[in-house]
Amino acid sequence: MKLAGKKVFVLGERDGVPAPAIEACMKQTEADIIYKDTQCFV
Image (cartoon, rainbow, N blue to C red; front, side, top):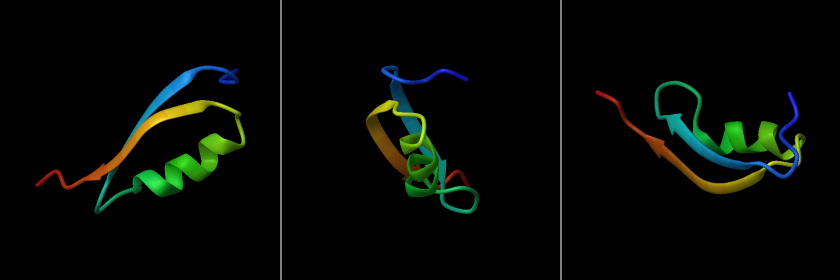
């Protein structure tokens, strides 16, 4: 998947995969993370 230069909105889940973990993976793709947050969906 080519994400270099794309803007990315990261929404993680408290009991699942948190946003910082997703962000760490996205850094390898050279995507531009414009927002990140971890929510609790209960």
